[in-house]
Image (cartoon, rainbow, N blue to C red; front, top):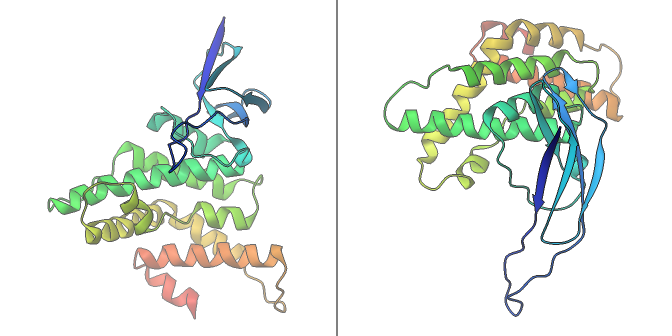
Length: 239
């Protein structure tokens, strides 16, 4: 059997041009399972308003990593479920899409937390939050990604990014939700953050090269997360 993926494009009207013609869009995609890729990356061209591609049926759970490496400058809308985003965040070999899945999940989690805070409730530690933290831990411990990427993966969206994705929400609640998410991540990864912080210690002379900058970025991010949970050790490490 086969599975089918549908790609469609549309461009909103602009002044003086009510009807937009389709453009050629290269779409790099790959099938990803719970433990990594299940197919090699492929390039499909979307030349009209829509097209479909097929791939061999896969019995095990999987998701589609679409627009890998930002293969076209477009805004992507999908019908991905939370399960899809969690799988891509934990197992996508493509750094761009792995980071994107994590950012999307973080915005969803912060939005949910903000709504709870608005009603005077304590944000719940649910399965999605735990699995989000597990996916971050998997990235942090992976040898496939450099320190600079890991620092970005551990950096959650800003309050403004979350506010732009919601219709009506209290900005203060969103800000507090960001704190809740940072604490949840730090609680879940505390030992890993401490171990990584110490492993990245460098007593040598300062160097501005990319590798050294990535090491400092990840080390500082580990410290920031430990501080977010008001960990007494954070103050000692910062001295």
